[in-house]
Length: 176
Figure 1 (spheres, rainbow, N blue to C red):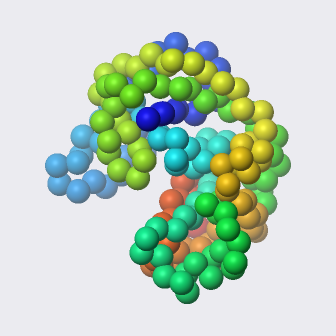
Figure 2 (figure 1 turned 30 degrees about the vertical axis):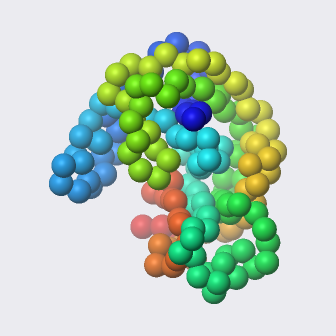
């Protein structure tokens, strides 16, 4: 299993556990997930982080429970693995951004959910790679990018049978 952390910083020698910047409401017994942790994403779901840190985005992918109607609605006959939606206001920043992908050891991470892994201990990266062409990285991961004026028309996607992951939506136009 490969785990990654994405950053704008090219020189992180060690990831130290830290609390999340914006705590989330957690179910009983899961409040520790807002505490000091090192976060990583698995290889399958790394396309969620092939964007500038604050770029609002919604990524969709099919699950075994995705209905034929929802598959038609979102994929419309296309065969890509995921669909990423971003706003035009972020397009140029995304298109020209560089990111640093840190390859992390599987130990001491424990699985949380949705491909996110957490460690309560400091983690030393195995390697770092600079990604200078994020559109190409997404294409290589079989992700179609759709650019919209606003992500608001997708607000109901969580009521469908596709998996939806929204990141930094507080930065999206007209989201609140």
